[in-house]
Amino acid sequence: MSFEIHIEPGRSEKNYWKDLWRYRELFYILSWRDLKVRYKQTVMGVAWSVIRPLLTVAIFTIVFSVIGKFEAPFGINYSLVVFAGLLPWQFFASGLTEASNSLIGNERLISKVYFPRMIIPAASVITSLVDFLISFVLMLLLMAFYRTVPAWQIVFLPFFILVAFMASFGAGLWLTALNVKYRDFKHVVPFIVQLGFYASPVPYMTNLVPEKYRLLYHLNPMVGVIDGFRWCLFGDKMTPDWNGVLISIGVTIFLVALGIRTFRRMEKSFADLI
Image (cartoon, rainbow, N blue to C red; front, side, top):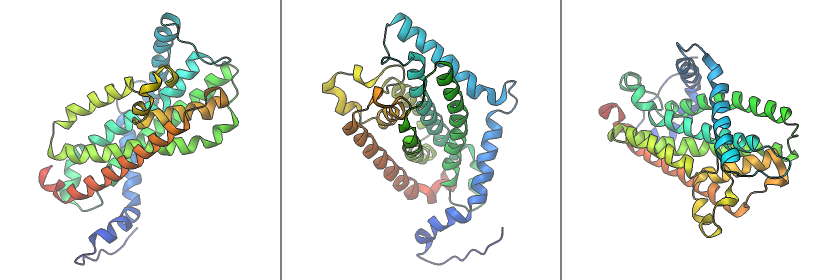
């Protein structure tokens, strides 16, 4: 692909979004490179996308269902409930972690050539989406094993995947921009992910949270996403609090706006700071 670059005063902001499309080939290359690097020199390769969630679901089922006596809705195995919560959470957490470190990890590329820097964190989140899709196939196989038929609401699943992507991308943009200037954030991100895990309904269900804290609880964007995931897979047996889902979506939109604004404001200084 060949094209000409015209540099005109006052046009950079307007052309920036067009450049994202014009550099789509670089986006594909970075996504494929990140995917290969992730499993390079590993004995199990992409099988880790299957092994990790399976082991996590097994541990949570033993701790929360067998020992803690947590119960799933009638007709649904507890392992499926945990897996349906773990899938979007792992996508969000992996995308956020990779995106927040993506600019630092591409130091040489950023300091040598021009391209819209937003492509780098976006490619990192897309790489996590591939892991998610592999794990989702495993989820469908587990549902078949437990003789659980997906509800018709599964047609809405792409919407909640999109919301999870936006939450990961928005927060990742914000953190990776700050990480370039303040390297302290590389130590803060793992703590945020760990805290977010316990503040999300992954090994348990939202109805266990006291009602007086539900509004505050839904400020975590992944609460609405995980509840929506379970509704898509199990239907009316796990109907979410729709007001809470709307709050989570609103917070997600805010994160995207905040991430883009912070990233664009700091982008010109990346090459000097990195």
